[in-house]
Length: 173
Image (cartoon, one colour):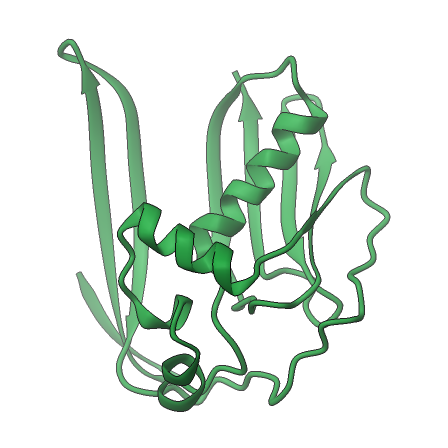
């Protein structure tokens, strides 16, 4: 754990490492770097969301992502994520200062992996590294895009207002 002063207030960085074993053998290692901020930050978010303008990309792989309140509520339940920014509109807008419900970061990652599953069906993902960069909000017209390479793919989630809500790199096994 490390504490730092950021432009939006005090930040706490925590690394969580989980090893999954099957019959005594390690089959998966997951490492997450989590950032917690104190209080309401100074980050600026749009006052109102444009839910009509689509994201545009020239990348080879593309998949529209529709994150509505029902999906966010279900994903919160499925993942046991009780943070109210994902399902409680008055809390997300009034207390946290967001313009709408916040789309879960792991849901954005799953959308990028769905893009890989659809576009490279014969490939097995060997590794995944991702970074959540800017919040995406319920109702926005999000687009998962990808640029395939020889050994993997570069992926991102974008909207008309943000080129990179989330980015990821996958390598094929």
